[in-house]
Length: 130
Image (cartoon, rainbow, N blue to C red):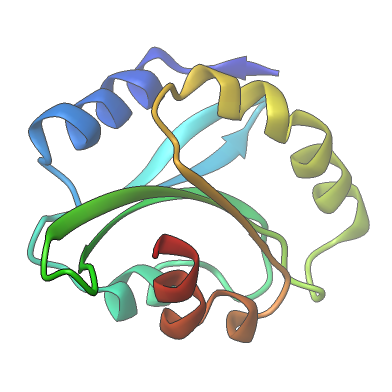
């Protein structure tokens, strides 16, 4: 599975410059490509709404939060979205190439796998970040 240079470039921009709130990636013709970029103003709801209900995707989300000590922090989440309703072949392709793709993105702090929106609710993201 190839990874488009754009994937790494956009991820570095999210990590270093915070140009994006999230990035959605998809596998297209044996290559991982950027499908959608979320602007810094977009919310977690905008992010979850951009994931297709019946197709697998990889995504990165930059989560800002305030700790119990009142310190502003941010964590970069890698989310492997594999809904139960997606095709078996697609699930296999995404599952088998996930680790290799994730290695290309240096700086991911939390990984989450979700087959249903409830598995990546805002509360789960928040609890995993703390």
